[in-house]
Image (tube, rainbow, N blue to C red; front, side):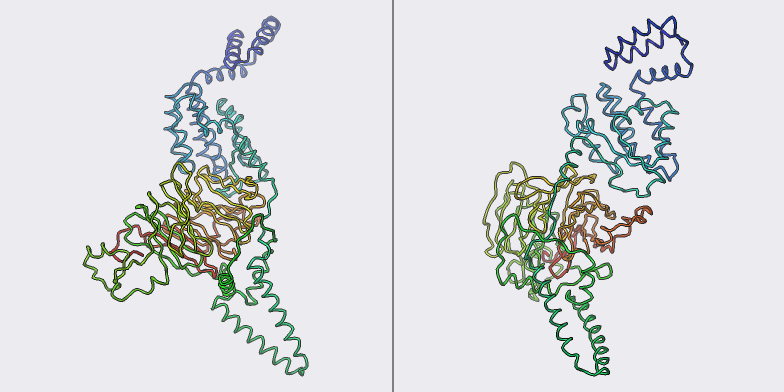
Length: 634
């Protein structure tokens, strides 16, 4: 190859990249050294020629990615799952580079050819990028602009990294190599590749937004419980009671040795019998329960930043009674589930909610109505309402939701002028919030069955009032968004103090652990993530649901997490093992697969709402998806 031809390739490349000064210096040095320079080595000349050919047209993106894809899928299974992580960043940047260079038709062909490889994990991202049709779209679309300004961080073992470099250099894939150098940071680890395929931190996006999130997560938060809470008072009362019992036992030391042994044996038997009875009855004040609770570190106590409402005495007594009779749950003692199924809703049910004690069930409907059922009154149906003629379809359709005496079985709340998308009860149950397509939020009184306040100000439908969760100490609020992040806000300053990044689709549900230490979030893909609030890190993903996770709920002592999904199932997860993962489990790859305690499938009912009562009974609600015989609604 002539030196002048090589110089022409180099000059054309420098001019194309806009390196004017470098081009000028190169030409001066080339003319100076032209007579004295030795011939260029054949390998270097060949490499420059191949590089110039690859730089000549848009086909280099398609060919380079196709070779990388074929090589990755044919790799050994031990390294394949790590190498596959590289494909998605390379794919989207090949597409965006083609668009930026004005090759729109080639970009669409490239996108449609390889999009199926990434639809399972990145469908929503692909739907956004599908709208990029010109170079100006790349600048105007916030999502595409942020991708081009950010870098992907990919965890990969040293051997997988070496294999990737060998392939890229061996095939002279300079275009793909340039994309990887510009848009990917590899976090290379020694040893064998990790076998945790669904590690949420294996691929992360770093850039201005991620750096800001990391900076926010350095802020100090106080995740403990409120001082002088009802739970703390009950613990103090229980400890005083146990101390008095201990003192009574020590006062009987005047007996003989033989009688002491007899009384000790009898005491042991009596204690064991008492323990069994308490376990059956669901008491949480037994000695065995106390020992189990003490294995978990007690949450620190913090002061509220805002004044807390005064609880009426009768309500406080009722709550304390529930706490005394609480069932202690664990991996071997699962909760009972009471499932409320809405019948004959004809796809009109938009949402449902359950009060904290399970006595009230609310349903929001597409006809703008909000209905509340009182479970105590519902159980008092007359025999005539239960023995209606099943063949009289028209009569049943007219009396759906009505008892035999003509009275409705529910309380009807009317005021919205659009479908009701969400409803939520206050802790005591005397108030209820609802949001609607009419752009308003309404506060209702379940005592007076009336609308108290109408909150106006939104210009578009208010979709949800439940993907917002108060922290246990009321100092923070967590919000889930369609931007795939969860944020924690300080209620006093209004400042964001945590950003949780890791979900691959929009957030649909949130739940806070009772001690305020952990938070669970569920997304549209069926993934649940357990977060540590103090560090802002994901402890583990919980994989098992195959569709949207619409509801999450922690048991009262925080040992069990319940999840309800559109896949018509309720799953129970062991929180203690989910938040305490040993290194051996992480290496074995079974860290997130063994935490599902049990799955409760419904017949054909997607799970809209979940609620643990203060006695640890789990309530669930949903609408039957298939048509059934006409019975009274609920």
